[in-house]
Image 1 (cartoon, rainbow, N blue to C red):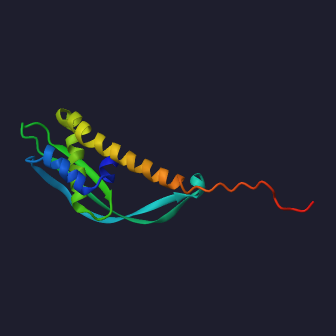
Image 2 (image 1 turned 90 degrees about the horizontal axis):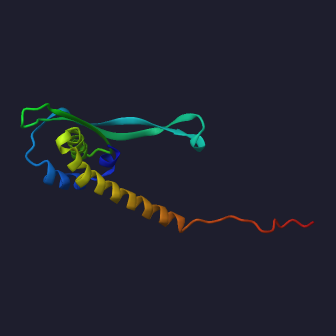
Image 3 (image 1 turned 60 degrees about the vertical axis):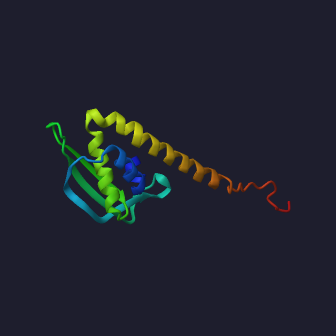
Length: 144
């Protein structure tokens, strides 16, 4: 789910156009925006504290199976207010729960998005590493 939530709505819409076009679905919970409390820890291991609030959008859908099989339910929560992004992520979540479609969605949607997100994270890391400063003191400067 994290890969779908971090992907852009445009990327998900592009993949949905190829994989899910023509599939009918019902909205169990229409996309709605709200706030969640973000918790933090001092130093990563200290006592938890409330860092602040973050806007999220959630959606739940039921994907009807045309073959008369069980309907698949998908849920998604994404950062921000993009309602279409939340709905598309929920639709892909429902597709992933269908054994007949799971591998195709994993191969054609999840894997490419995950690779692109990993490459972007590596680029950010390299850019930050290029500006790293090592504060190493060879002589303290004390007169002894």
